[in-house]
Length: 388
Image (tube, rainbow, N blue to C red; front, side, top):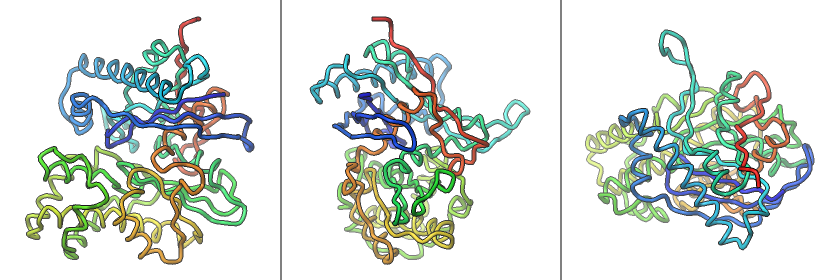
């Protein structure tokens, strides 16, 4: 099957589209990433996504409109990608669309008198299927959540398919808005894989870059701002007291925790330590790296020796994060996923193509050892295209 995977992450910085050729069945799923691209969100739509994801008020009607608008936007991205790849949409068998996460609360909290966990990804799959003529699978996370899981991370199943090794113990680190780690002991079974969100990746860096540039910069390209900043150890020590770092896996997080209020607290912390903008951006960049090191040392390395750390996501292009990881983990070989055939910016979109393929064949796509679910779940909802 030719499958398109579509991903827009916590940073809402654009829509990634990957085209994959996939065949077979576990444990011998064969896949090839054929092409990938990234398309920006319209500026007004991105602003609305970020506003809503950080708790901005909206009516039920506005929520419905945003869901429909995102569906149309993903469909446009899919068709634009097909044109760029030189592939007719009629040749595409399936689309897997992660959707845009607006809310993620995997730990039950009291709502209407009952403990309730929920997650919400917007982007109407029916609109995508109708506009592209391609069956679309969306809304992957609730099936795992319904079985008591975190609904995240879901990429570990794909990490297992792509990166499991008979003689090497590996950890796969994805640096999107949030950092997540998948641990793959050598020659592991699916039940031996653990995975969790370690904390922020690009989210705080992007937020501070935008704040201090008055919106001119959406991220700190090549860590240029951070590399101009001074190191402030006392400020970094306070960041490392973040309670989320101490929570044992399974765990997941997002903009609900590391969003606007968290950034306000970081800015206040910067003022207390008389940090210049570059100093504070440097601090959160190093905090990102050290929170990953802390997670590995606290939850992984006491039980599992790691030979290689495979890095993907936009943060894999941040030289300061990579330098900090290399310095703090000298016993582990650090390599980008591109060295294993998966471009760093394409892995998550590729992952949702693979997850959609498994759902289409009525096979589970979660790893309960990673999410904490009571058992396997067939992920997502299938939206059929209109009859041809």
